[in-house]
Amino acid sequence: MRRALVFALDRSLLLLLGAAIALLWANASLDSYQRFAHAAHFAVNDVAMVFFFALATKEIVEATLPGGALASRKAAAVPLLAAAAGMIVPAGIYWGGAVLSGHPELTRGWAIPCATDIAFSYLVARMIFPAHHPAIPFLLLLAVADDALGLLVLAVFYPPGAVAPLWCVLFMVPALAIAWRLKRRRVDSFWPYTVLAGSCSWIALYMGGLHPALALVPIVPFIPHQGNYHELFDDPVQGADTLSRFAHWWRVPVQGILFFFGLANAGVPLAGVGPATWLVASALVIGKPAGILLMTVAAVRAGLTRPAGLGYADVMVLGVAAGIGFTVALFFASAAFPIGPALDAAKMGALLSFLAAPLAVLAGKIAGSRNRGRAPARS
Image 1 (cartoon, rainbow, N blue to C red):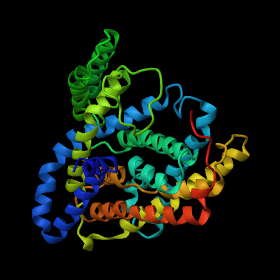
Image 2 (image 1 turned 90 degrees about the vertical axis):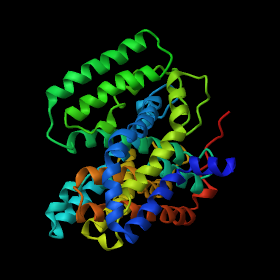
Image 3 (image 1 turned 90 degrees about the horizontal axis):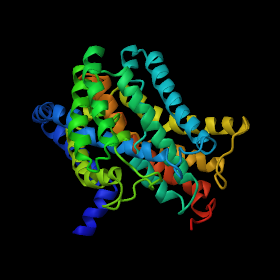
């Protein structure tokens, strides 16, 4: 049982389970599901998801440390540029498709296909590429940068209500001041950062008309951390730095949160498939690999270098894997559209982005990614 639980947690299977239950529930009794989803929306999307985005921010912070993928500008340049193109091209495909198909009202969802689900794209890449293949850190850096830009897009372009900058500043300044003071006093527990600074930040965003789920994003960089890089998705050892202990403590609860996120957001009636479904799915599955590959080629021709052992075929394969939007795409869909047919259709498109997983595995077999391109093993 313990091994099965660890397997499920490591692969975010609770999120899939929640999404599957939501789909069955919504198609068996839509009214009761919608009542549940409406009741759970605030607690799940605006409160509990704070900790999911905090862990994503932790990965971004640590990626900038010595030894991390963002530590060297030269090493990070190609995947960072590829991440930007992997957002711009899908957004352009979605927006252009909405206009050309006669559905300009759907253009508001342009950011939905910008998303990459870090956990699932990483797991698919591990299935395709051998250990120490440079495609894996390339994809991880790309996905982390994608999430960082996605958080910025969410905050700027999808405020849940009228933006009130004064309220935001009124509470955010004390939040940052508390976090700074805690760090200066070398407070070793992550709870004061989370409860004191995090609560002020949440109130600032909520009162300011921004997404309160991002409350810990400006606080996490203040949580004390060592000056070295931790491998993404490694289970942090308890007793390490404060930021690692924060991640260690919240790792399992966040999987439970993701279960309820899937349960509260993925319930879509199958009859709800519409134009937004195909716009989101096609922009993710086609636009992501196209943007990533084209930008990688352009960056290399401009004088930058891609990692040794990483061929363009491998870039195409990891680009397909990056087309899995799922978690963040569902969140963006809920932010972009009110409850109704457009939201249902967009969510179905986010769920269909899982088609990128078998397509990536197939592309990897065709490209022979499993049998070549192995980078030197780390000592």
